[in-house]
Image (cartoon, rainbow, N blue to C red; front, side, top):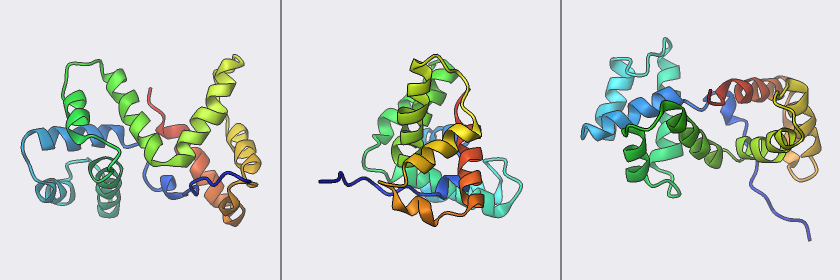
Length: 165
């Protein structure tokens, strides 16, 4: 019997890991601001420093859904971590971990492709590595067959540019 897996989503092509914005979001929550107040500041005061109004809306929506409304994320713990004295790179990696758990395609690329490449001694992941991985996943993720070359390109580029430093 074939294992049923979550469907891959191409939505990461419009909202990267948003590490900086996630930190801002949880810093504002720590100031006892409501979600509505933060949303208003994101849209009207450009709290996330995004030029386009739509980018602000998408970023807020992605963060709210990934972290605030996600039942698998303990908001209090994440807020404590983000507002702690931990090294920024550790915070970035924790945020990225939660991001990857909310976007199964990111999790799979990281754990099934990148980690195995790392174990083989390869420290650089390329566009062709990810494209090959996506093609290898079409048997269990039929939704990939419906994606255009442009969609795949956007996913690849967003994955490559959303990983923490």
